[in-house]
Image (tube, rainbow, N blue to C red; front, top):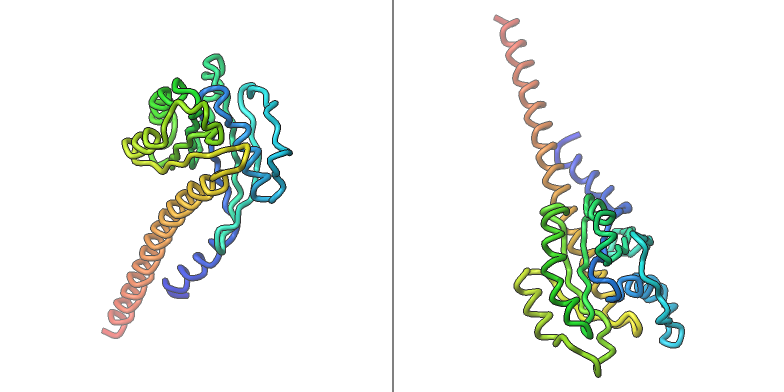
Length: 227
């Protein structure tokens, strides 16, 4: 089997399932649990506004849910980890940064302090997460326009500062929930596929070089025997 055939077979097998760990981080009360809940309901087309409840309790430590998203020929299972925003759980949640492929930083557009603390959460990511982790900024509760304290332009400017995608969302109305998760999932998938293909090409090239060296050695042996 030649190198090109090896690569084609492997790339075909890449159509199988992927498993990505995505963290939701941010201050307590910004709507991380609601955002995770809305994602599952949106993709399943089950969420109606009159079904939404505001009675979500603060997450104790860490909670996670799983959801499968189809992206073209790829099936991606997301493990969405909803981390507690309270300082007393910071020592618990810091260990969960490790192994995450994506992190969504959530703030509440009606709470300026949660927006100003984004820089603190970004510092946490730099400290504990992989350097290559995909990041996305979300301004949640966009439906509560009468209590807005953070403008869309401020959120967009902050995202440009950190060079990461930005969405304003509403977990209550499901606005941009699916779009935000799909965006970061696509970015993770493209990065993982690029890295995998690079490894496969390198491995295939090494195998080809080894085969060529073996062929040359066999040829030399045959020539020596003839002489």
